[in-house]
Length: 149
Image (tube, rainbow, N blue to C red; front, side, top):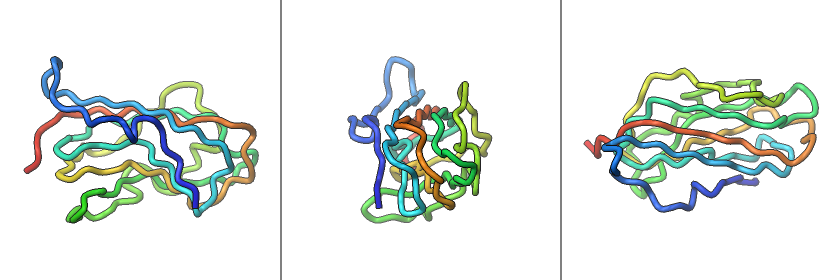
């Protein structure tokens, strides 16, 4: 299994700043091989205490054919997990990554507060036919830092 990560996944976690309790992170994950059902892409890390209300992405062409389907959800990375994983919270069996996006795509979802640190994970449910060339997935998450309840 290959796990693809970007620089945001290893950066220090953001806390309150001059912007008050606003939280915003972005990440760019390089994809250098065809995505298979054994792979996962860690799109974004969200710290505990964030109420996530916005998530958008753009990506290059991730499939030479028209077969790639993916789930996009979250999972806790807390040592003692109490939050159940929701692998399809944002997208379920989506074919949106079969072709490149020309602009940012907003994902509609009900805002959610994470009381544990989570990863936003893209997991193929149907493998890509091939990768036209090395490309990337970009993501931006937005929310508020509320603290852990």
